[in-house]
Length: 144
Image 1 (spheres, one colour):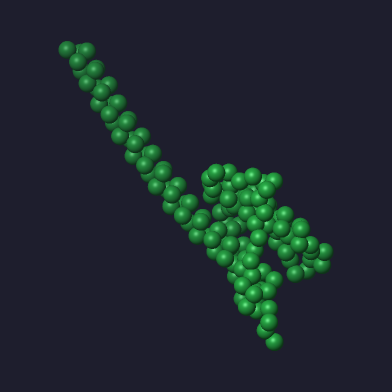
Image 2 (cartoon, rainbow, N blue to C red):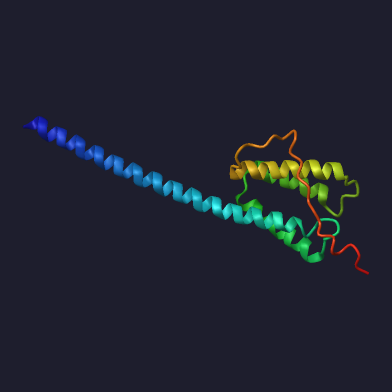
């Protein structure tokens, strides 16, 4: 009789443990999905703000949006993204008189690779051949 009770208790505890682990795992995945969605929204706003500082489309409003969205990244982005962002911002700064297109492009690629790594883009990128290009609409070029 005692064996039956022990077996029943073990089965009950096992069932309870499986239920708890399943619940915890589901909640963990839900939290991760919500966090990823929130990060994506901030990263997308940042990428969109880059359009406001591209030569040909740059505007004071664009620079304000860029400053705001890049500052927002400081709150949640991992250290690798923040370091790449700071390097990019230094190179891209209006006060940097030694800016070069090559360094801009290298640091932009480094920043975007760090962001893509953070959000888990799959398959993984090849840093040696990754070369993003920011496009301007060209609508501001012929303004007089």
